[in-house]
Amino acid sequence: MSTQLQSTMKAIEEQFANLRVAKRSAPTKDSTYLLSLDISKGEKNRQLVAISCSNKSIRIYNRETLTFVREYDAHPHLLNGVRFAHTCENVLFSACSDGTVKCWDTRLSSSNAVRVFSGFPLNVFISFDVNCNDTIICAGTEKYEDDVFMVFWDARRNTQNMSATEQPLGVYSDCHNDDITQVSFHPTNPNLVVSGSTDGLVNVFDINKDCEDDALVATCNSHSSVSFINWAGKDYKQIYCLTHDEGFCWWDLAQLDTEEPITLLNIQDVRETFNTETEQVNYLVGGLYHEMTDKLFVIGGTHMGDLQVMKCDINGLSHLSMLRGGHAATVRSFYWNLEDEYLLTGGEDAQLLLWKPGAEEISLPKKKSLKIASSVQLKARVHNKSKTRKNKN
Image: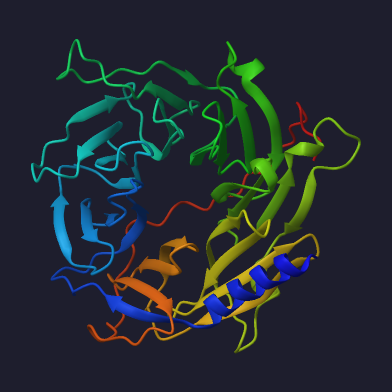
């Protein structure tokens, strides 16, 4: 490892070791879980945080102050994620189990979405994403009878019919046989998308191809129900996933055309590695790839609200930092900005927290656990499936 890389890695470790709660969002009247969050992408307006909540609403906060801005509550069923557009800082997308993806203008307080993307009858969307140039939306469905779909729309605005509900471009229907729990587009290539399912499969597609069979680039098997997927590695040629059984899998797509195995790491249960008082993991939250150091990091947590930050390499996961004193219950989502050195977290204690290195908390006190039953737990059915097509796993 070069001296410069060692210095950068040490700086990252110090960032996490020194993270402290700087601010907390104001308490709400209802017992609402904060399920997922995203940050506005524009250079002038990286100040908005969007959160999908268990009460079927989207809440918008100011990122720096954590003050409440507005709320959208026009979802009749469960929300399944929020995403800000990459090229327009005021555009926000959300997916709902009513079979729609909605588009919001965060400058407007109206409870009506500015665009609605409709699926096919009986579609229940439980995952979605928008590609890096905001041209394509993809949503994954819950299984209905024998059908499960990845549904695609053209996200570019139709100027000829601004008020119409927008219909799908098409679907993929053959590469999963159970709920599609995760969809994630490549960070820089708008044509690459990876999907994960309760059938255990993680599929990579090139949507620029004419048909689904040709589009399938690779199939990897996690041997468990997939809860989180994302991209990593130089030029983002790697993918990794977390499972509902708290497992971790990591694959290198650059090895597809070689004799080398594509599996870099497969841990069936991370909890077995981190089970001491100082290094404890009850569940996994997500991960992040850091380009400058070419390192992958994974975040887990305890049911008491502590967070465990782990380094990842081909030898396994290792302890980096433990963040305590923040949440009082399970953490559901996070956003990590290494450039500006802050971490945002949201969880089942209904609080949004802003962490900064060396911060001294001057806002609201830590909230007690809500002690309520979750109505939004994803099904964790494990389906092992032997599938060898384009699979070098």
